[in-house]
Length: 362
Image (cartoon, rainbow, N blue to C red; front, side, top):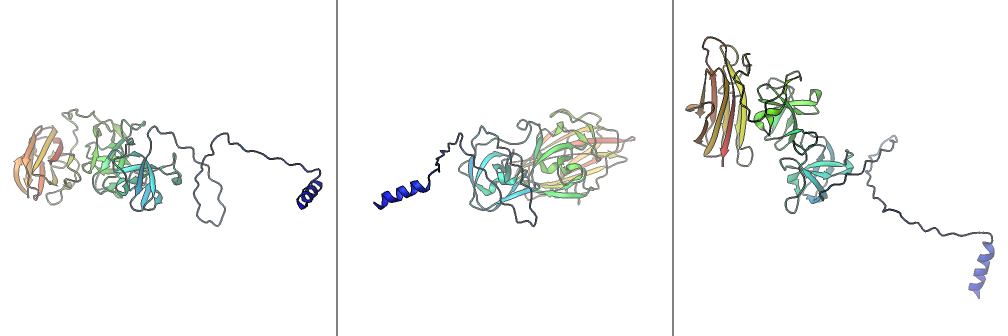
């Protein structure tokens, strides 16, 4: 009876009222929008423009987990800007890798980068097997056709092509850089480097692993392109220049480069320079150590031909180097090797340009 009375009272009270029930149906699945929590600020900030949706990838992301806290960078390099930090034991989606396989590209919307991506060091990411993801960057895989290179060991980035120019930063082993040019000798490579003048810097080619360097444009100290490189495997011109070689102030105790080849790191290097007499730089010294008992040495030259090239072990001459000839010799892993080049005057300006290639055979 009480129940009937309550219903009647509700009907009287709500006379003239109307009720409706709306059923909401989603035409399409609701998208999950991930937003970052902004740090406290004394003033309000305008709302940020939402990031565009990530492009559809034809390759499924590979799963990975951080083994420690890792930095997320804009580029696959320790010189790249840090756009975030991922804690240890955090799952990540791997969508690409650098040409050397030392960096993973991951989905990272929190970084606020175009495409919502970032780069992390591969050694700090645990995966099940080798992720099957595409190589990102480099000629043939980059639509812009960029040349990329891998840094072999820590080295300075300089404002110009030579040790006399100021150091504007450093790169670490396994960093990936984009090449934009080279000097006339091919001994120094110009790279994209945001902290440098005009957004570029210079690195010593002996510490860089790169392909098709000969096709890079020739760039002056002032940043002007004065020519284009010759295709790979093209012979050095008979008379590359008539100007004397620039002084680099190297010596037996202070060589132009001092390189250590290792089984787990850099196993080969290439060095290019020139010598001239009676004016210019008459001598060059290239020092290296090898881990293998077998080492291959190759020398290519062009110019007047009035020179002497020799190989020293612990500062004593052990062999003569001949242009166009490959030497495979029994090497002493505990010894110090030096390639020495000397230009001899014969009356006029004598000029020789050379390229030395050294490879340790495991």
